[in-house]
Image (cartoon, rainbow, N blue to C red; front, side):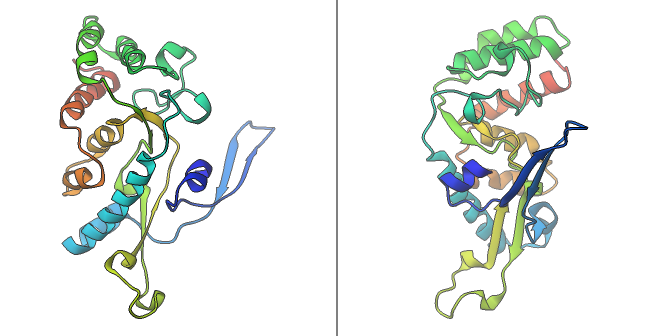
Amino acid sequence: MLFVRQATNIPVPKLYALYSDPQTGKNYIMMERIAGETLESLWPSLSEQEKDMVIAKLRQYFDELRRLPSPGYFGRLGGRPLLSFPYHAPSSDPAISGPFKTEDALNEALALRCAQECSSPYMPDFYRQSLPHIFRDHKPTFTHGDLYPNNILVQRLPQDSHPAGERNSSDEFKVTIIDWQLSGWYPDHWEYSFAIIGSRWNNDWGLRVGKILDPYYREVQWFYRLYFNVVFGLT
């Protein structure tokens, strides 16, 4: 959050304190409480025009994220291991959790992760054969890693919050992105692919993700398959 706040104009919660309890070893973050509702709870009550307003703001935010210069590796800030799928917790093996200098190394890590979780002993080699043809030529791009309506807070602004004549449609809502735990430098298809996987398809949110991010239709299909292989051990 500190990095995003310093490097962009994207609204994120203010960070007040970071500390660790020496007795329990637990880490704590004190941050700003953002007013508003989650987009997940608000979405059904929004009109089509209001949905477009929120989507336009999110597009602006993620376009700005994608303009951040690449550090030349795939990993979290400061060259730390990845946390987003299929990791969730750093592995002590850098061949699995990175950071990675190349996308080929990241593809091999995905195959190794599959070898740990997939029920078929042949599936990892299938990914070794296929992924280099699909996941290639993607640059490290700063990625939130969990773009889902529950991580977006929306506040409807009062009508008198802007002087007469200075208000436009995009000023009707304040939109804040929270939960940056998984963020880092991932292939540029990762944000879209993971957002589509996170869509529960009980509304039209998944159809609008492609208006927030450039869609990667080919990559997301393989991401879907890999996700279910690794997370659920399915073949």
